[in-house]
Amino acid sequence: MAFKPLHDRVLVRRVQSDEKTKGGLIIPDTAKEKPAEGEIVSVGEGARKDSGELIAPSVKAGDRILFGKWSGTEVTLNGEELLIMKESDILGIIS
Image 1 (cartoon, one colour):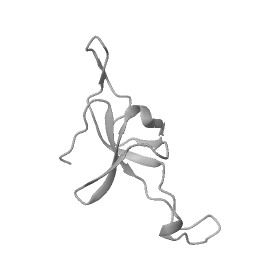
Image 2 (tube, one colour):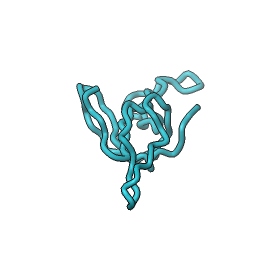
Image 3 (cartoon, one colour):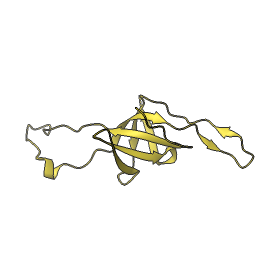
């Protein structure tokens, strides 16, 4: 991908949610919530301390993460909807 986030920001692709409930009911697109789970596509170089020292990010490309419902800014790159968010908006890494 030809996009690299700056500083402590990450580029995230949302993970597609299931089309059916556990009971077998099909969920229409209009009733689905946007998932708060995603995969990191690209990571910036990290934040800087006041002294200018670089703080390395604790996530890397390929990590599956959970993030807040209203986190990030939606962008469309190469026809794909992605999110740009700060590393601090990430709630955790799914192992």
